[in-house]
Amino acid sequence: MADWDPVFRKLEQLLDRAERLMPQQPEAPDWKASKAYRWRRRVNSGYLQPVTHLHKIGLADLQGITEQKQLIDQNTRQFVQGFTANNVLLTGAKGTGKSSLVKAVLNKFANRGLRLIEVEKHDLRDLPDIVDMVAQVPYRFIIFCDDLSFDAEEPGYKALKVVLDGSVSATSDNVLIYATSNRRHLMPEYMQENLETKYLGEEIHPGESIEEKISLSERFGLWIAFYPFVQDEYLEIVDYWVGKLAAMPEVTDDIRQEALQWALLRGSRSGRVAWQFARDWAGRQRLKSTRRSK
Image (tube, rainbow, N blue to C red):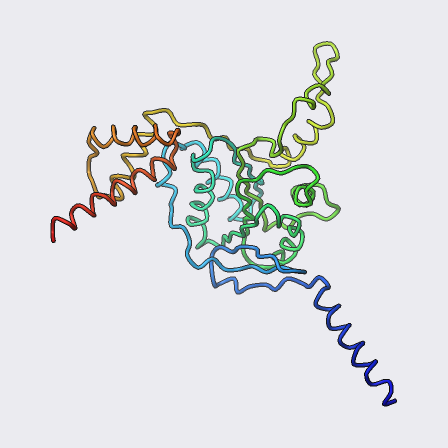
């Protein structure tokens, strides 16, 4: 038997290596450690990492999107209270508050049992594992996919379709998917695909490529559209953030003119640009006051 000892040791080493390479069951985190988590990918598995510093933005901080706030607030309220609700696709202009709106509803409903799991696009293939992990947990979960867009051949695309609607097994009642995208149909569109469209009398029949794109976005029950802000809306957002960050009861015309120049240089009048201007302006004013006091 002594001659076989090296062989046995070698086999044990090979088995240990094989076990490390095999997919492992994801470990469930401490759900009381945080209100939000990020899915982190390992070589052959993944885990949920608690977010220690949450964004404190509230619904009242989001200006110029009243209708959008009402829609997502209503849907999330239904979900948290255990009623039926829809997966949500937030699409439209950049910097208009799509991602911030998801963070704001988390802050509003977290004390009522809502939790958020952020999943990057390249990790969407793990969605079935994540859903299975939280299916029996006594919380309500929003799986958040930010800035979503991909090609049809990506594995994450197929996994998302299955979780939204299309698997033999039903998705857990305590999970919804909220996704943001600048594209309404989530995938790039090509001129060649439009040539596949057929006309039968007054009926239009899109080609298979376009139908495939539409089929994914249609799996979201609620679409919330965001549009570029006009100048007055942009200035209202500037007024709000300057007033909040600089503790100013009234914003002067000089500040608004400076905000318009800021937007012109950035090439955008979005809520994000207004917030960035307010941070810059408030910071400069505090720096000036500090210098004077010295």
